[in-house]
Length: 187
Image 1 (cartoon, rainbow, N blue to C red):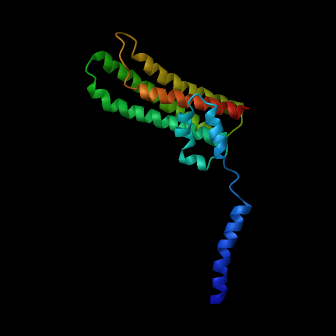
Image 2 (image 1 turned 180 degrees about the vertical axis):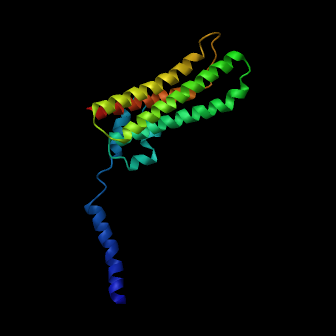
Image 3 (image 1 turned 180 degrees about the horizontal axis):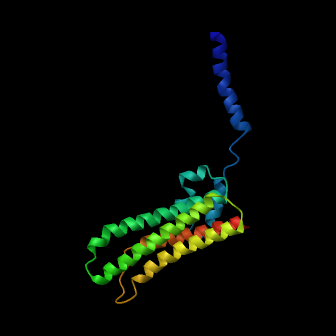
């Protein structure tokens, strides 16, 4: 019995290796496709950093999975912006700055809700035109809200530098990437 077990212990790894070669993880998106996709964007390095190097890309099978990664990266940027708003609120002494940061807080909350809605619909991985329209509408609503925050820093008085410009640019770039992914899904 012991000899038989030893034989099986030697054969089992060989069988596992054979299975892995016979049935490779062909359902995953090849990394070259991800790199080629990023080359189609306006921000290749940014795309590779936030999408191409994301740990979840290893399991991504298609553009639907890539969309979920891109929209969740966008949600992370929005969440970080909301945290930043809470951290800098006390440093704003003038009423105009306080008002502007309040508007931005509202707008980033709208963005968070909108991007989450796009993520929820994207999780269904539906090919229906209604779902695609909802994804596009929600993504655009989130982006518009972030833009309205950025614009707020030049309205109703002297122009001030927005303390959220970093997040605005990241959301802008991620939304451009997301739009390209959506166009690939519709093709």
